[in-house]
Structures are given as structure tokens and as C-alpha cells.
Image (tube, rainbow, N blue to C red; front, top):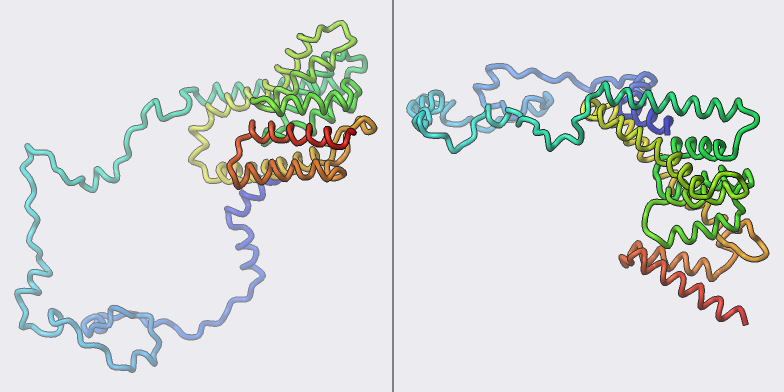
Length: 339
């Protein structure tokens, strides 16, 4: 994410073009441009002053009568000294907006601002988040005998901090931080993922389900594990967003900051595609392979995936309809091949 933001900033500042100009040799000029003189203006050559010498040798078109002869004195006088436009009386408001009215900025209303928070308060919130993040990661690395509840909190706090893009991006990180230590089995992970995807709401809710399973077999009750996972996943994003609301009014007009945001957004889209690919690689769950296998190993699952993708991308199929259709196709496969 940092690399994407820096790359976009360097590109918008024009450094690649400046570096290219250093290594390029200057091209020789074919001919110097002739300057426009007052004599050329009187002869009527004001419309093309950058022509070459060969073009200047050609006869010029006749100049306008107002400038070539002195017979049209009235028209020339009217052109040089136009009659002033009558203005409305001062007691009546002008119907035509004046130049000052067009250039004057409208006063910013309080409703147009996304937040009335001051930038010192926003900076303090971001500083508080950074301190808690550093302390959490430091204790997670230093402490040798950690409780499973604290390990769950520190792992999900880290996951909630480094996730950009949302959506499917969180799924591979949760698998790495929850399944790899052995707190949750791959089978329970994939079954819970299927259930969560069938219901509305963000994928961060999946962490609540994993938190309740991660503390199983410990003195911590399951509802407390779900609460720990909820706070650890949502707290980093909430603190960062609320903190930047105080800084947004200062940074939103900065070109370098907007360039960094465009790079971060592009990198987040790339991470979403990466997460979808990882889900594809572990989405097939069978009795023989509890850890999951690629969906491409089963042609029927490939057909279900393609149907959902085509229906949503080109036929505006609603997600609930796609989920129900996928479930029906899965039941049809089970009814056909289980006999």
C-alpha cells in the first residue's frame, strides 16, 4: 500500500518525464519563428504570425476595411470607443450576475463538512491508535507465556490494521492468523465462511464467529471470545477513520495527498483480486480433503462459479438470488452423483 501511494505521487509530480528529458538530446530547431511587428498588424497578418518565410512571401488577403481605409471613420470610432451599456438604477438588484459575484466563493456551511472535529483532536486519536498498536505487537512478541485470549486479540488487532480494501481481503488473513495456530480447524473455517457469505453484512463479522471458536477449551467463555474478536477487528479501522475526519479538511485540497489516495485505492483493488484467487484455491471442501482444495478440480463447481459471475456482471442478478441458485445447483449435484 505504501509503495502504491508513493508510486502514484512520483508519477503525478512528473518525475519520470523530468528524468526522461535529462537523457534525451535536444532537437535542433528547423527555423526561428518570426516576431509579429506593428507593420504586420497594420497589413492584416495578425491571424498567423508563426508562418515560415516561404509562406510570408505569398500575397496576404486584403485587410478589413476599418483598418485599410479612412473612409469608414464612423465605424472605426464606434469600434474604438464603444457606447457604454446602460446599467439599472442602484435601488434595483441586477438580474445579471457580476464578475465579482461569479468569482466570490460561497461560504462553507456546517452541513457540507463531514466533521466538525478539529485537527489536533484527530491527530491525538491517530497517535493513540499508533501507541496501542505498537504496545500490542511488542507484548505479543516479547511475552512467552501468553493466554489464548490475548493472542487472539493481538492477532486480530494486527489483521484489522493491515487490511486495506475490505471484503474478501480479510479472509486469507483470518485463515493465517486463526487456522494456522490450530485454534480453528480448516473444516470449521470453510463451513463458517459459507454461512457468513450467505448472510448480508461485512466479512469482518466472520471474525466474531472465529473468535467464539478460538477460545473453545479455555476458561474464557465463547461469547467473550466473540467480543474480543469484534473489538480487535473493528477498533483499528474506527480509530483511523475518526482520526482522519479531523485531518480531512486540511488534507483534502492537497494534490500530493489525493495522489497517494488514488494509489492506495488501486492497490486495494489488486489485493481484492488476490484474496479472491486464494479463496478459489481453497474453496472446495470434501470429506477426503478437510483443509480445502481448488475449485477447479470439480467441473460442476466451476460451472456454479461461472454462473454466479456472469449473472452478476451482465444480467444484474441480485446476490441473494445468486446464493440461492448456487445452493440449488449444489443440491442438484448431490442428488445426481450421490446415487
